[in-house]
Amino acid sequence: MLISWLERRIGGDVKEERVRSAYGKAASVMGIGCNAVLFVGKMLVGWISGSVAITADAINNLSDASSSIISLFGFKMADRPADAEHPYGHGRYEYLSGLMVAVMIMVIGVELLKSSVEKILHPTDVLFSATTVLVLVMSIAMKLWMASFNRRIGRKIESGALLATADDSRNDVITTSAVLIASVLSHFTGLNLDGYMGTAVAIFLLISGFGLVKDTIDPLLGGAPDPELVKRIRDRIMRYPGVLGVHDLILHDYGPSRQFGSVHVEMDARQDPLVSHDLIDNIERDFLQEEKLHLVVHYDPVATDDPRVAVMREVISGIAAAIDPEMSIHDLRIVPGNTHVNVVFDCIVPYRMAMSEAEIKRRIIDRVHEEYPNYNCVITLEHSYVAGRKEG
Image (cartoon, rainbow, N blue to C red; front, top):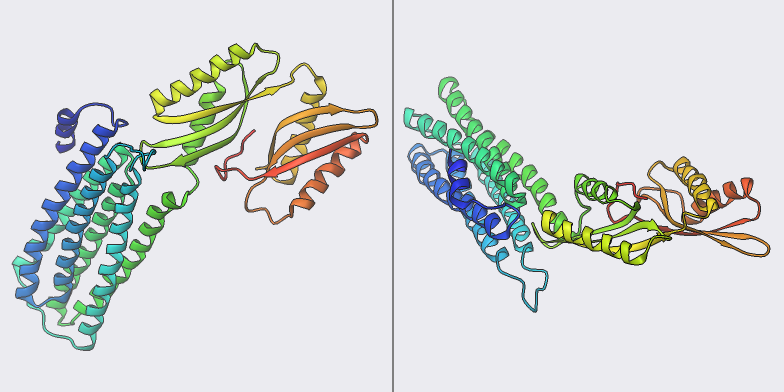
């Protein structure tokens, strides 16, 4: 219901920076308010009952409110327009805010682990009451709603920071449920489980925080793009009339809705250059308008009138695929000479291959020589910048 209200209130296309930022800010403000309420309620219950687990859970909610403040700051900073010092914009502030949230989760986990171990070594009685149960149950219900809310908004605007916040809310559901179970069991069995449950919660937070750090730091380090995005770009380009092949796709991520890329597109060399250039302009314009992707297209002419080119492409592609299914070739051309024929091409190899470059070249060259003794292969080996996605 709230998301429907936000959609009517904000409107517009979520790929627009203004609209996307508005959703992010709204989700952050909601997180600040909800977590502040939970912190006050749990802190009072933890202080009255003397439970280290409930108090730690309250501090965790305070850290969540701080995380939402950081996310709000991240969205506001990321919303700043490009300038002379930052021509690609400030979108990576959102990634930085997500990283700070993940680090805060780990810090809370360490502190909770220390206090829980201390409670195990020096146990104290925990006061159980209906108020304790009510507050914890209400907290679980609110965190379930927050996890769903942040995940739906995060997916809607493709925000890693909000998806991290959703995961954190999910973790809070698990930790608060654990605290509730420990309180109930301790009351009815007489066993003091407070410190042990706090320790389990702390370990869970540390593991979760480590995973979130990895997820949020990958785009800052230049991680490989989403394979689905790579496939969508390639398939769309291949649908344009006259495009024979796509390779050397490179994507740079400067924040959500701030992606830049380049790609090589193969077209018939006999086609009028003005026609080919017009097609390239259309591809670049369409991706900018519909995908918000600043794409630069490089034109690779293919000699379709030389039957030897088509034959050798098929032969060498088969040889490369036999070595490894993810290997592919592109930019193949035939250069005839008096005593031999040079076959010049580029070959994409996966990063995981243990075979040396010299061995890869030798195996391709030997196989070609078996069928075409006077053909000499001139091979350039390269890695794909969209790792794991076969090109060519």
